[in-house]
Length: 428
Image (cartoon, rainbow, N blue to C red; front, side, top):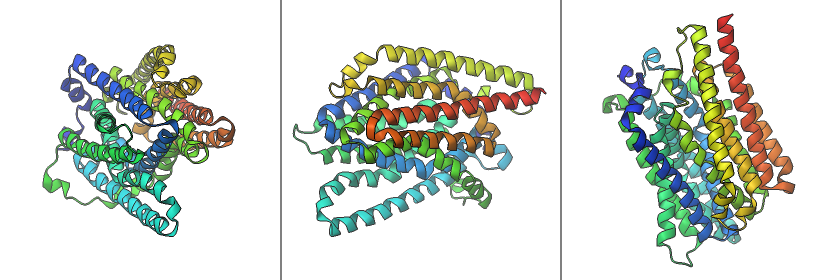
């Protein structure tokens, strides 16, 4: 079973969809992302949209921090083809780690519910706020599980499945809520729609994972071994820094900036994420191009340089096209979102950096030099959060976007230079 779980992820993924069919699904996913964002900002006033996206940060940011170390270990297991080495099939490990992610997230969700219940009793003036954020707290376990599985599918080169988990289920729930809601619908209706979409995404993720990593029920009941838990815990710092790198600037913005700033940043960020739907189309991160250690160093270097060159070219063309269309894109949302062209450009640059550095990041995951990875991710996270924290009072969303870009540049530049130096040492 380990052999079937690890061999040929890339070829299976390539064969599972025709090129035209896959492109169509990517276009639909990107369109759903745009439509859902447009629907939210037109259904809600900018201040209400800011409150909504603050709740979004609560659910998704906490989920990222809670699952990240498990996600990193799972990615290392898949990309490094470690099922044959460890004797643990990919599907079995996914179930074992998925249970831990769900348990960990549920405990945090329960603790937050106890705190909010106590606040509701002690401070009745907070009741409207607590009612608004309750669905986002309840969604934490479902968001954690769905995004954990989605990132696992992407690590296994099932990028289309990984995108479908979030883009289709969650965005469709938002669109349905806006379409069916009366004109004077309260904000809480849309927050409960987020919870419904998160549950649907978790169910869809579980179904897709079962299809991608078939496993016998008897094997699924295996307890997780101590060595795996120790290896997961060794990635805790990197996982925490990785979560802060992505969600730290958003968290700072959510706490210290006005709701309108939160809304304008979130709209620009969700629109810039469309880049991620199309970057995998070139198979930049395909596992067939990640060569094993037994491959001659000269071949490894040529393959890595070929990957990096393709990533640079493809990412640059895609992001340049989106930059040219930026004024028209933001005009779809109306005021005050049209004024955020600079923020949008910076966030598109974040996606560009992530696209260019993706081959280097995957190479780092295969080799897994803990010290190098820790330095890269921690320094990037600290820079991102620090820049945002220092500039948020004066620049708001612009500071958050600038911090996110600096963090992305640090991590991806370090990943690329580390990968190149490792293959160069092999030539020496």
